[in-house]
View 1 (cartoon, rainbow, N blue to C red):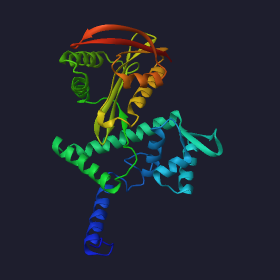
View 2: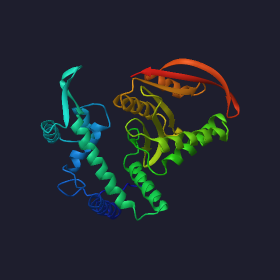
View 3: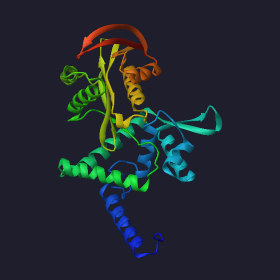
View 4: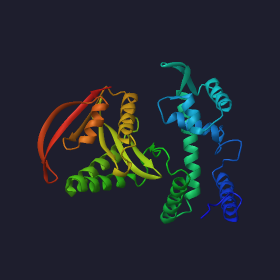
Amino acid sequence: MPTNTPGDAQSLEVIARIREFNRFYTRMIGALGASFVGTPYTLTEARLLFEIARRTEIEVTELRRLLNLDAGYSSRILRRFIDNGLIARTTSPGDARRHIVRLTEAGAAAFAEVDTAQAAAIERLIVPLDLDRRNQLVKAMGAINAALEPTQAPRAFILRPPASGDIGWVVARHGALYAAAYRWGISFEALVARIMADYVDNHDPQREAGWIAEVDGEPVGCVFCVAEDDTTARLRLLLVEPSARGLGLGTKLVDECLRFAERAGYRRITLWTNSVLASARRIYEAAGFHLDRESPHHSWGHDLVGQDWSRSL
């Protein structure tokens, strides 16, 4: 059976429908104007800020490869960003011919402005949709990704602050996952609910923060940084869904928690876990935590060994 060629009737129809969708979607997301969603930046500039922001630093050649950008075009944008104080550029320590870029404080503020504006624009799009239609939209987008890039690189994720509905998700997923993996009873879910209620009721945004990890529009992980005392922070409720493991999410969540704790002025950070949670323990060890003490306890229907870990900031 011969395959379809670009000139046959079926292919021409598919091409026409895809072009029609492209015209519709670029108009809907505000990609056609001189500025992207009302910000001072074009869509390409906003995307460059995003790719730099989601990493501590990135080589310019890798940035171009990710976005498939012409070297001259990307260089002009990066030069403008440097001149405006949004990014800093240094020479790679391993190869003087390569350059590394990172966001400055002003660049991080610019990215936050773009990110907020884009989120608000998308929110305006989905406000008229009920939950079922929103889920259909996200699944349809996933189907497009899978069809056009079936062997794509590992799925991208984003980290964002908790929003309405996320607290309940954190409680429910902790209860369900730990029940499935370790048969911990419902009293564990109740403990998580109390921790979350205390976080919401007493949250100090200058000294406490939480992050929800998203993949394909769905929450798949979380972590929280709370105050233990004036100089000590506590990492709580690290969770990564089984479907999202292998993406480095656990490490990224812990790194975000550590960075926040340092910026908030803490000198030390602690956490409490249990010896059966081997995957989490490996993440903590890689992040520089050390085991302070262990103590047996009977909780949630099982004999367990609790562990206190900490590290300096």
